[in-house]
Amino acid sequence: MVPVAIVATIALIGATVGATLAVTHHDSAPSASMPVHGQLILTPYSSGVDLQTFGDECSGPGGYTDVVNGAEVTIADDTGKTLAITQLGQGEAVGSTCVFTFAAVVPEVPFYGVTVTHRGTVKFTKDQMQRSPTLTLGS
Image (cartoon, rainbow, N blue to C red; front, side):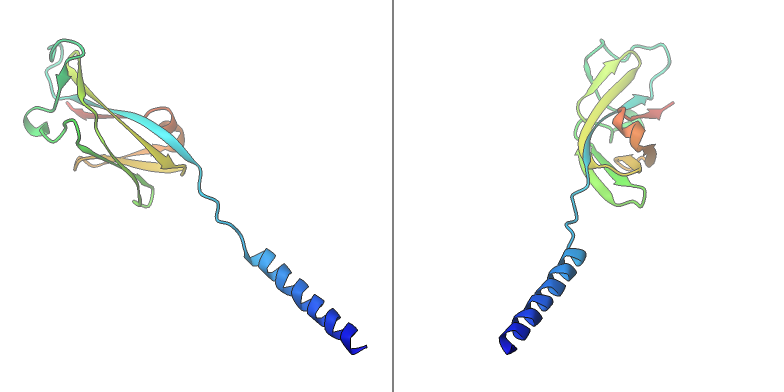
């Protein structure tokens, strides 16, 4: 009888430990991510004045000299935690504006903040981020 009792006790302990591990062990699945393709439209130019030929390269003039190809773009969640750091692409002249693009892959969260250089943070919802967020700067 002793061997049966020992085997039963070991089996019971094993089952208890296994059940405890099954309850307490959970994989923290990586959060889903999504690509973001946004743009910054710089409009410091007089209305109706063509910046350059459509499609030419451009960058920020005067007080906007920090808005250039390679300028830092930070994407954060609603608590301010940085989710991605990327850069502005080359600006492209479109009439009297200079349009820059940026792209990143970020975790899916309900709300985001996008900051270009030191220009302040613009808030977006997840839906807005999925539909290509647009920031504007200038007059």
